[in-house]
Amino acid sequence: MRTTVDIPDPLYRELKGKAASEGRSVKELILRGVQQELRGARNRPRRISLPIVPSRRPGSLKLDNAKIFEIIPFP
Image (tube, rainbow, N blue to C red; front, side, top):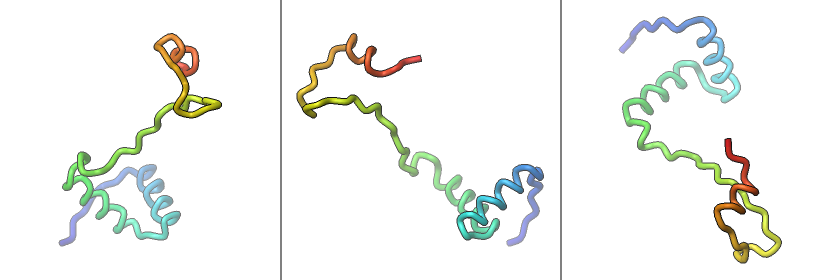
């Protein structure tokens, strides 16, 4: 099925650049986006970045809340 979608120029340039960098067509990227939207975001695994706490002997670091706040910068 064919359809027409108006994509703002700046967004289309970004889409076209991403498609080129991935070696795909704009059509492929749009179809992939539609498929992901229909499947729902809950089906995609999220990458979680955990803070790394340095230790000279891993597994032996004794931490309490005060120490954690010293090591990890919180906003």
